[in-house]
Image 1: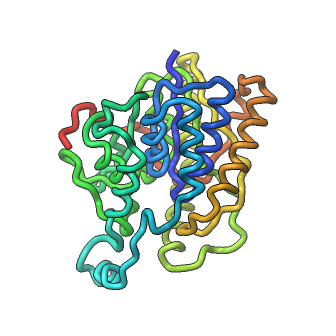
Image 2: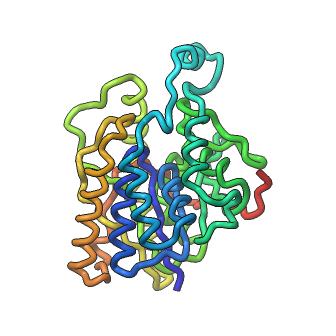
Image 3: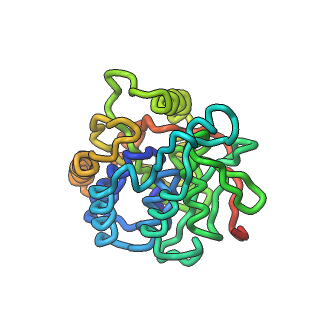
Amino acid sequence: MTVAFALSGGANLGPMQAGAVTALLEAGITPDLLVGSSVGALNSGFLASRPGLAGARALEEAWVRFRRREAFRFSLAGAIAGFVGLRDHLLSTERLRTTIRRWVQFERIEDAAVRLAVVATDALSGAPVVIEAGDAVEALVASAAIPGIFPAVRYGEHWLVDGTLSAGCPALQAQELGADTVYVITTKTAPRRRPPRGAVAMAMHTVSLVTAARTAEQLATAHRRAERAGTAVFVVPTGEPEAPGPFDFRHGRRLFDAAYRRAARWLEERSGSPRRLEARETPTTPVAPAGTSGETLSHAKP
């Protein structure tokens, strides 16, 4: 039986996934396959470098220490160039790449200690692209390349952007890759009580609202596939903590603890055997339309 962890997008909510993964590993649930979109891909790359509970605890500490400057370098000149159309993005990926090189201990995806699949979005067609081979840093940057914030990444024959636009919860992709049991690890938070501050933050939030409306359909498709095949899909509950602003990375410990406690209680209540009905909890992170799970790049050149 192949067990997959499918990690959603969620930007600075990544510590929640570290909490859920830690609880799963403590319960003896170990992935044979890690599939991630956006921050879920970054977390998957970290875990694929450091298998087991020790790796999950290292990811926890990495997120607790993480700050905005490690991913974003704001430049007035760069922002103006983006707004007036001199370039298609506001920020450089230089610092993001530096962080990825520190987090990921392999150069090519196929060399990961745990099988890894990175999900990005084709910037021209909007289709999901699943990357199983090739340059790890480039693939992870592509999966996290928020359109308009970061530039699109050229990967083989594709221009790629953030994976959440086409596969916010990559359960379908995990099934396509042969998973019999999929644990969907999301970054679901409590409903916002007020709109986020700032033009960019508000734009990102609006995109999240639009794409989140398709989440139930995508997960329902994954459940139907599992029911037909006699397999299983479980959505790990998150505890739904209050979300910080999209560029605020100071809440790693709080987010980790909320997700860890809720996932651990969920597993304890069910003795490691979650009920299918309660696995249908719907995340609020951006998710793409259901349907095709996308192209798989198993022999990518970059």
